[in-house]
Image (cartoon, rainbow, N blue to C red):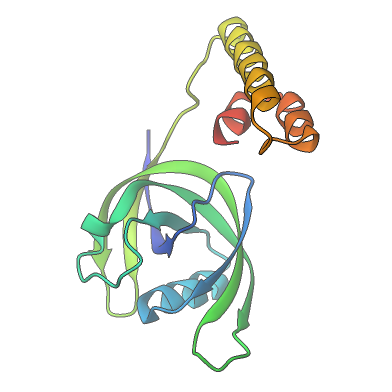
Length: 165
């Protein structure tokens, strides 16, 4: 697989999956700079989950090494004058982050796309069917899973989207 370089940001308490829109507040200068630079150049950005919400000088040790290449849909300054940005991103592709590089204005990373978990379509269909059946059984015994969620899961036909759900 080919390796590519992207600007990278971390989100605290949020996980971004492919095909998932995420509204987030960005406060760190390195992340705000990366967002602006990627948006201005119409580039994608890699989003990873931060393990601890506390600021940490060691970015690499405090983030997941699996992330999502994401498209920046919109940027708005926060109206509270806190200096944060309200950003809407949409996940595209799951990636493994191989390493990072600190630049003057933002952090970049080298990534490799994570391939689909199963190439055998027949096996994939059997696994998906079994997973959906188990989810229906779970939802019958747990009130947190309403009928809408069960219908959504039942309607998924893409294995990667099902796994991410």
